[in-house]
Image (cartoon, rainbow over all chains, first blue to last red; front, side, top):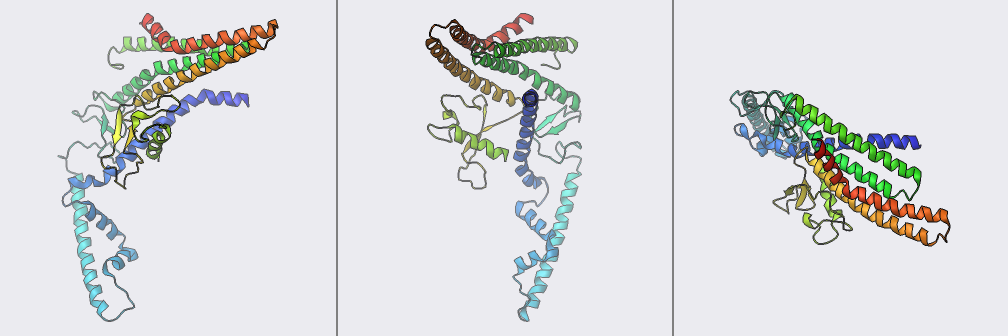
Length: 229
Length: 139
């Protein structure tokens, strides 16, 4: 049991970081999702009502729209036939218009002169953030802000951004770990065993600090001013 | 769902003043986890029923680097916990000292408790200074 707990405590920072990242991505995607629907404003004749109607028309096969719009009850008398005809005609006209609307959107989507839209983006045409140089058409859209520098190829830019992100946090994690070690030391109550555990933690933290500093220095020496600036 | 959860947290955190005012957050004198986040989402229309917000404002996570701002706030919460724990440990040590009845074994342990509490508090408080000192020496 104790070993299990230890193992869990060892991996928990990674799990925590990962879940925070996933949560970040999830929340920003969820944030972006409502904006996606009224993105059709680039297409002609587009508004929310029209879009709604057209999607409703696509569900016409179950006859729901027919009943909703035409208030037609089949059990009623002879007048209904004329009403039905008018309704059918209207629906045909509407569905024709909807086809035209869809075609217009398709044309707009394939327009080469459209403002920046990359083939790599996963359908989020209104993504607020991007990585890579947009001028040379090497950029990708991202749902969350990685802090990219918008230079060079996208994947390299993204990798540098992630390295920068981790490097920003290393110092904080080391400080937090040292504080935790101090707390452990405080609560050891003069027990040599738990004091030794706290000392081991603090020693590891200082070792980690040295490793981080040397990694930083070597990286800065190899690629000066590119990765960490 | 995450957005809703995030909106819920200041509601629990604030025990004084307006629950929706992010500046008045705090619980037992602990700082809030979002104190360093500089983005605050403000709902322009508070009566907008389509919005999932409970309050008209909520802490906003603008980018991936804001994770470290949350971590910094967590460290400042941890520092306060360390101070409280040190005070508790010193009191515990003092009580064991008082009730040791002159037995050298118990007296030694009580002394050890108090010394460890002070050393641990010093390490916790000076953690930031130690790290910046070592980093400054190396570079």
